Length: 261
Image 1: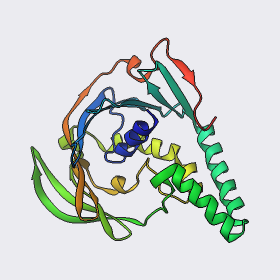
Image 2 (image 1 turned 135 degrees about the vertical axis):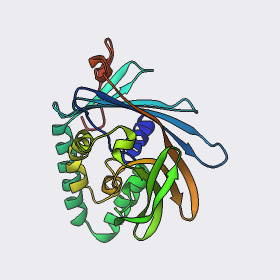
Image 3 (image 1 turned 90 degrees about the horizontal axis):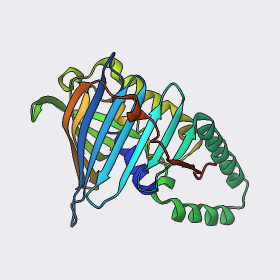
Image 4 (image 1 turned 90 degrees about the vertical axis):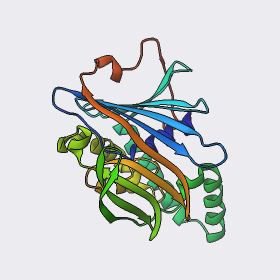
């Protein structure tokens, strides 16, 4: 559940969505991991009145739900199989950021050999999240390319000068979105800012590069070196009123502690 949850947060960096006046937004997306298994992940994003819900389910059976409430400044990770949820508040994120800053200060005071040993243990425990944050840039590669019904601008996303993602973005209006629709998603990016500010490593959530793209990404390809490792696309987008229960914790679900508590 936890690995799938961070994958959902990573997918959120692919597209910027938010509230439309007096109506919600429902966007269905699909992402494939290319290789021997070709695992497919279906993602449904729902937004309305400063609230965001993302439901992700892979063909391998992994499932996760993330709910963000901008006005309450709280994010919930919901486990439907376990009928439980984890709550992360803005205060929790700030505390996590302070803890990371303190850890870095303590590491800086250690002898070089001891610091190297501790850092190696942390990398083994946290994997790629401990990688040094790359210098991310976005370049326009072509305009007027067609992806299904959309006329798009094609971009390359570069990390330290190497292409990590190729994406096609359509004008917001073509995907039934407005300029104000970035508000809630940007608010969630701000929610995690204390971690980005205090964590000198690559973050999996709130990826800022995609937010520099004009329009809405309707297709993307992720690269590992020169090899295409995954691809995704928007399947549908519509505006509709959503019930308040969509953004609430289901009745009877038990609150559990996360690693930040």
